[in-house]
Amino acid sequence: MSQYDVAIIGGGAAGLSAALVLSRARRKTVVIDAGHPRNAPAAHLHGYLSRDGMPPSDLIRSGRHEVQHYGGEILDASVAQLGSDGRGGFEAGLADGQRISTRRLLVTTGLRDELPDLPGLRERWARDVLHCPYCHGYEVRDRRLGVIGGAAGSVRYAQIVRQWTHDLIYFTAPGTLTAVERTELAARGIGIVEGTIDRLVIDDDQLRGVQLHDGCVVARDALFVPPRFLANNFLLTGLGCDVDDDGWVTADATGRTSVAGVWAAGNVIDPRAQLITAAGAGSAAAIALNADLVDEDVRAAVRHHQP
Image 1 (cartoon, rainbow, N blue to C red):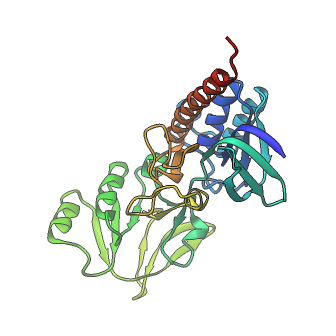
Image 2: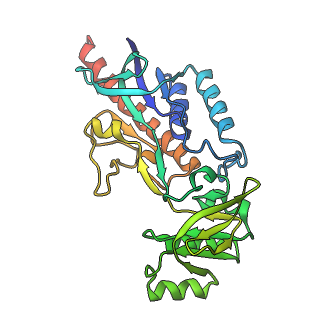
Image 3: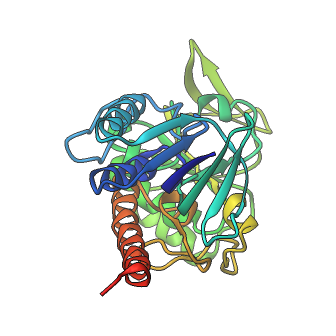
């Protein structure tokens, strides 16, 4: 069984940033990554200083190389189970049968997007059906945009999307808007279409519009959809980590969870984290993890010290 100081589960921006810090701190570190990044459908990443416009896969490839340069290990595998090793650390059982032992855990498994059940929506995800205006708004600026609303907070979301275009339509079911919301949308020139959406209209592999149940087609070049975020936190909850009322694992500013020796960073605990903030959270968690290990190293040294 392989023994590590820190095992990081999830090899995105948060996990690789943590691995880089820990490897440079001369900790024996392994990153275990299943290879299913949330941003895989996106052609480019944005808002990451010095990396704006880079394909997400290039960022991961470069990050892996940097971690390995300092002695960090990368395992292309998925974790099937986690548990205590009975000595204050943890054991991880991988899907391929491997087992590893580690003093500390950092979970950076991210989240997944639950989208409205509309024909054609998922196939266009991260192409011309988008979720983050800060990530993608500039690329579709001044075009005919739409927001599929109805969920809590989606009117506010539409007001944010309005920053990137003067031609915005808010789609929602009848009877969902308050008088105040209707006034606010109209005040900023946001069109309102109330009805049931049947499907997206796609022609020549491009979004052309939104077809309503009555057959009317509203021409649009891109859509923004506020998805429901679902954390990939089953490993954390399986260890007994505390969650809040919405089911998200709670952690302090460094990512320390309620379970001793377990940290978390990135979208698995923060649905609003973008790539650059997830990377920063991974770095902060790594520094806290190393400090915690140093404290343990000091205690062990004192026990064995001979005056």
